[in-house]
Length: 426
Ligand SMILES: [Zn+2]
Image 1 (cartoon, protein in one colour):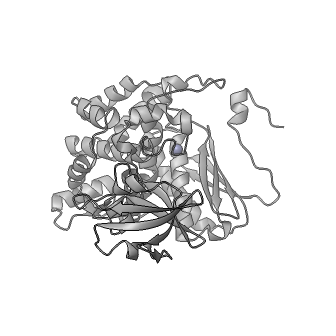
Image 2 (image 1 turned 120 degrees about the vertical axis):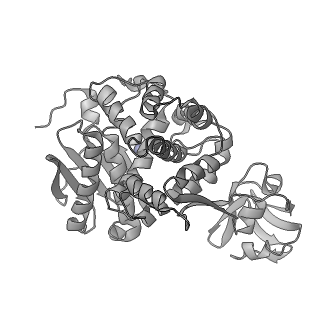
Image 3 (image 1 turned 135 degrees about the horizontal axis):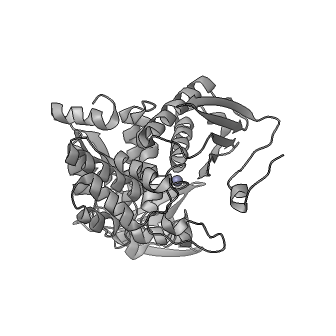
């Protein structure tokens, strides 16, 4: 018989009952971890258990304790393309697909990424909780300003710890970081809303974009400022201390005793670990909208890496500031950067049918790359045919490609520093 102690206990215990459920167990630091898989797939169990054990051990070592007695990864592997994960007290429900691709590099890396992320939440949000969410009031919205801790830090560690535990190479980790950078830099909301304010707005639109280009992502920018802080703490202490220390103290002082933390508690812990005031970090990157390129570039130098900025080679994106997708051979506008040439002419969902009288057929980039100062576009907007002028601004380029890379001239000290950060050779 299954009996719940409370409503919260009930909804925190998701389950799957199925005659085709697959199950394996592994131990990490004496704690039993269960991996449940439902779906038409054939997991490579030895590889999966080895990888899961590695990142679980790394997380347990980081915190030096686990909030619960056991843990369950409950995977619903779907026949169609899907990605989602939700954390619970001692479990996570992960939905991923398509099932037949589970063990391909593309989908298996998603399984590892989301699993490592959700396990980290066992501490960071299920146990280490913002004061506003403790106790949790299920009758109304619970606004809080620190989701850059709950989700940003978890997003950072979810990928970083896979590299640190040797599950991923540094190159694979950098590819994931580049995805985070791309998502951060393609959204103009980074100039508009601070992380703390975006956290409050989570209740308005959850995972969706909400008002386009007005909100910054607590996941992506949150992960980048966590990286920045980790490297800053490491640089200040010559790797004697890091963001790990902040998390360990959050666990010992708040998670373990069941006390909610406030924004000020977090600032105090960061400053104590840093051994100096960190007001500028918080004012610029948590409560402000200062750009991350320069500080991140400098911070990455400490570990022999750098941030590269390249021009966007797509004419639509780089010269005019809009993105399109192809739907059944139709070219439709999906994103428009505010204040760009495209913003003066186009609207999201416009179907571009011709450029200078030439039909658009999977060749938009070619048609917009003649170097002309302006182009005449024929578009269908809400089924009405319009002719528009798209004029380039020769002084501006948009959506640069920002990526992380190792520096060719990294010094031996920087290479050692890299290894202290990632536990991998440079
Ligand atoms: Zn999360």
